Amino acid sequence: MKTLIIIPSRMSATRLPGKPLLKIKGLSIISHVSKKAVEANIGDVIVATEDQEIIDDVKSNGFNAILTSNKHKTGTDRIYEALKKSNIKDVNFIMNLQGDEPAIDIKDILSLNEKMVKNLSNIGTLAAKIKDDKSLKNENIVKVITESNLAEDNFPKGISFLRKSERIDNIYHHIGVYCYSKDSLEKFVQLSQSKNEIVNRLEQLRALDNNIDINVSLSKSSPIGVDTEEDYLALKKIMEYKN
Image 1 (cartoon, rainbow, N blue to C red):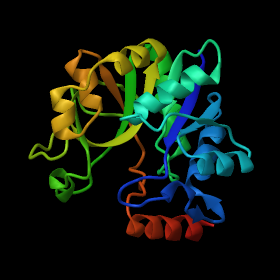
Image 2: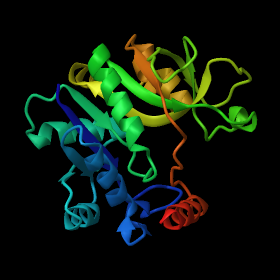
Image 3: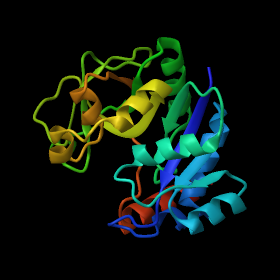
Image 4: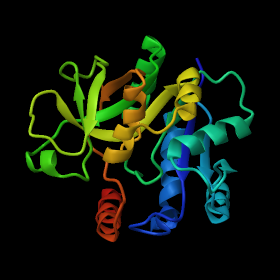
């Protein structure tokens, strides 16, 4: 079974423009993510971007990148274009890593890939335990409700994805890493955005609204994503302190 990792990235993030090229320990955020993906050693790694400066940075650090259209509404559309342009043959699964999570745990990438291959699932994603009740009401923390309790060795279906909730059982902090079977990705990008997806600003609801299952793998921790200047400085401090 062959997995291809694709990392969508663009310079025009609303809250922190130019964030893929912000540096931590002398390496850009997008190249840190690429490095983690390569170290996971589950298959080829490609950064998919509409920005030439990201291509230049990634390639100068020894990683692979593909220039994609600047018309895409979602990261999934971007990874599909990169898949088609890559000419990499016989791919069974495509893993979409977030370009702004340089602290992602390699073990979580490996675990998700292993479960996808073992179960031949349509779509798989990651979720971590929620540490406090404040997170339930925080709309910036996306939650997933699973059909059964998440454990290291299971891969239950996600029933719903939401931004805020009162519920406390079988609810987890969703981490935006996805692994698609090739057929599911092709089917997904041809579907129109669903009403649920647009209202909640959650692309994954398009799959559930069209009866495509998403299975959930337990993540060891919630990686810090870089959305704001504060996130960047906090993560920089943690990653630089570690060494």
